[in-house]
Length: 297
Image 1 (cartoon, rainbow, N blue to C red):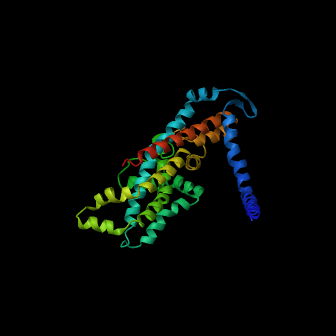
Image 2: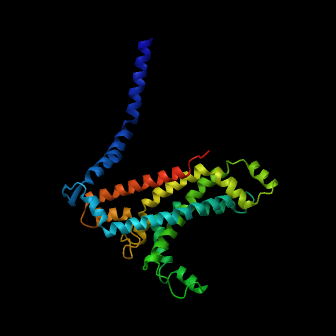
Image 3: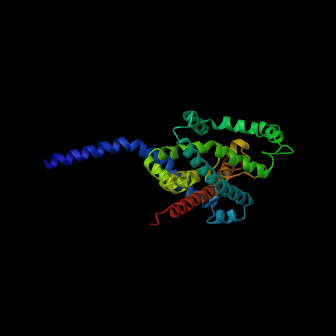
């Protein structure tokens, strides 16, 4: 009997490995190998395939590369400004749309969520048209007296950054809102009713009941938003036609890696080094967020 049981277990083990083998092989080839290969390449310098071992030369180059410093500054700026705005806006929208007495609630939930499933290219073209010098946004701002002249959303460094932040916020706020909305619907309404009876105002219920009970979801959305923003590429590439302009005002680390690899003379080793800057930033910011959200009880 023991021999039979052992044979059956080996049979199931072999079959199990055979079932997952294709996935394991694909993960190893397209995920694990590129990670170690990029780490290996980060120690090489040179253009194209004419590379040689350079040790820490790429790290030294980072410190003296004004484009890298600009890309790093832009990436951190987008993260520090855009992520808190998006998280707070998504949280407030979820709280408002959790009220079943609100009319057309299904329409509003769908309308706010739709941008995150819209075509990236289509919405980028739409934004470029809306925020052009003679676009509808400038016309509206001048019509209501908020601007005396057209704003160069795509030609002035400050306003180009603002446009990127607006585009990311418009696209991804609804995505985070769905997580908060799902979590809010799992909170026992009797907690809010008891707080109402005790005379707790709406703002206090939001701060002292809603936010603490959504803490795990807020941490999750903050981390995935952090990763997405630090790896920001699509919006900047489409809005600036891959240039990160004007004058590198919106270039990000991911876009710089793309340019180093595909637009300019390929510098694979240096691009791989910059990719590990992104890895370190994601790990550092994620750790800080976990540390800030830890249970202090």
